[in-house]
Amino acid sequence: MADLSALGGLQDVEAMDLNDGIYADVKENTFRLPAAGKYTLRTTENFPPASFGRTKAGALAVQIDPTIVGPTNENFTVRFVKVSAKQFERNGQRVSQLGDYLRAVGFRGTLKDEQAQADAVESTAGAIFEALIDWRAYNKDTGFSLEGMTRFPKLEDGTYQSWVADPVAKDENGNPVKVRANLNVQKYLPKTE
Image (cartoon, rainbow, N blue to C red; front, side):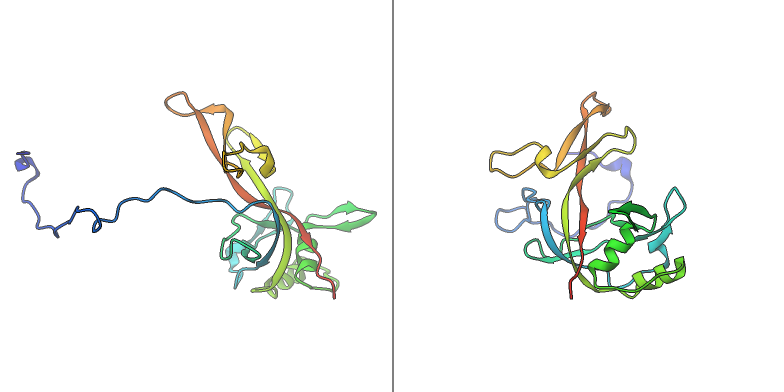
């Protein structure tokens, strides 16, 4: 018998039934990252102050973390999605990720300052939009990045493994570090009237 005298006063515990059919065994992890493709998403229900920040270049950035509403993987949250107001040129016009997002939810108008941009995003709480989503694995410690679901290892069942080994980083046993994929919005699809 195990000697527990060094532990001091033993506590009363609730009986634990380890019999088959009664005990809740750990199930095999069946987590699957949604496949790359076109999805309908819903923005967060509110944008707390922590949603608003700045990019390294100083532009307004907003974390929107939408939830998939269809056609599959309903209620899966696409985490770490930020849209930046930093402008760049596309087809001779000045655009931004924030502008692409706002057009995807149907917002139209002219935004003349950061407050107007933030107010416009805040007005989209709970809005539905469409976007193209794909996978991205990134290790901030090494800078290793892999983008595109079809670049990840293919499994026997035809799906893709949602992690990849970092070719540089090693764990404490000398094995490659696993870098997990996250969903990444590749393109916001503008809502047409």
